[in-house]
Image 1 (cartoon, rainbow, N blue to C red):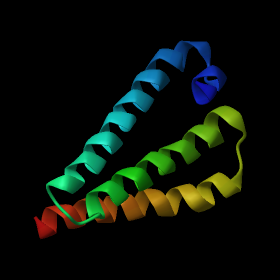
Image 2: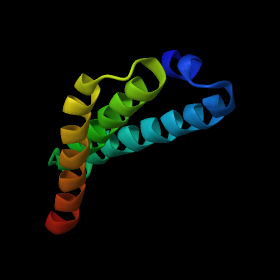
Image 3: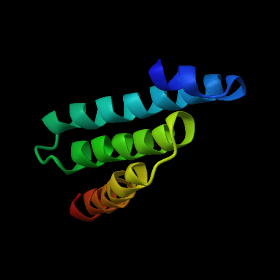
Image 4: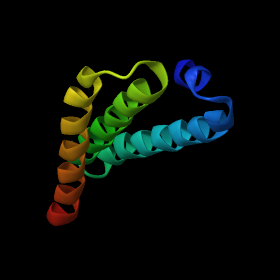
Length: 89
């Protein structure tokens, strides 16, 4: 709700849906841990979630280089981890 409230009015619905979709992704990735004992997929999902949080903070709260400094490595790290899950499974 905190991020949605700071988004422009015309984007609030889309931002809320996107956060919901990302939350479902993280939930399913964590739930998959029971079937696949490695933590690569849950770590990738959580890293991707937080990388998008850095984008939201930068866009809707306050633009800052610090958001990019932790958000971009998380984004690219998440992408590498997602790719790794395809390779190992």
